[in-house]
Image (cartoon, rainbow, N blue to C red; front, side, top):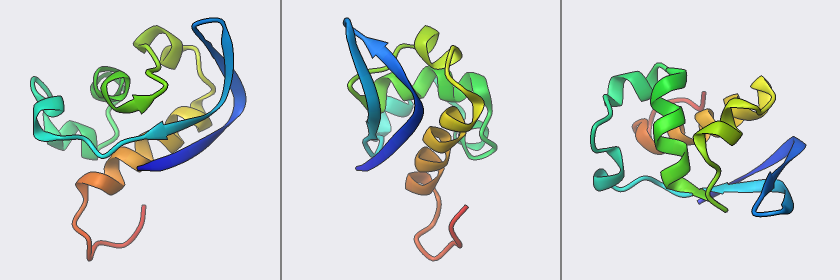
Length: 90
């Protein structure tokens, strides 16, 4: 699990969220996704996966309204989970 501090809070169920936890995806959460697309940080692939692995759950619509740098930080955490342990950090 990794925590990402957001530069601009998002509202989830009426509460402002300033930090989001990204949980390591399980294989079942990757269903219907192309792992290579996730590794390439494809926006559409991450818009599908991130609602499945964030706490609190951030919807695709909420993610689409995020600042790009916050979204990229969330993407980077997903890629870290998928990359080989010996690979350099992204």
